[in-house]
Image 1 (cartoon, rainbow, N blue to C red):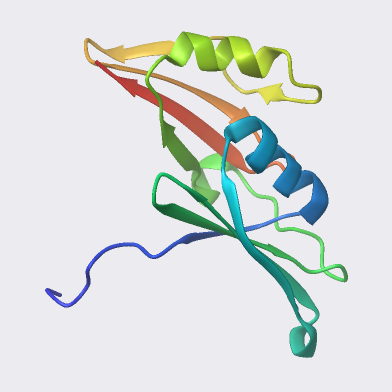
Image 2: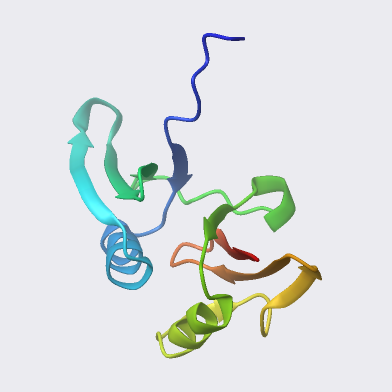
Length: 129
């Protein structure tokens, strides 16, 4: 449809909002936009922004986060300027689970690697040359 301008945000269900925001703000470099409860459905929402792109996180204390195979759920992908530097920086962060041991050369112009975020969400880092 020509009326669709683009993606507003991607929403990820998380296990712990404090840990999630700490990771995305202090490790990834996102900026907190807002954080608030939706009392009528017992959900907490938060929005973060990085370079004009918005991520929304939801936390529901009485419902465990859905965990399925990483390819069924999808992932968040960040475009980076130096993939090796990103991998090096993340290697010093506690409790980071690297899905890929090191960046992989996918094509002559693309390298990528995956980690798990604080709630098990899959995060991809991509460098285009």
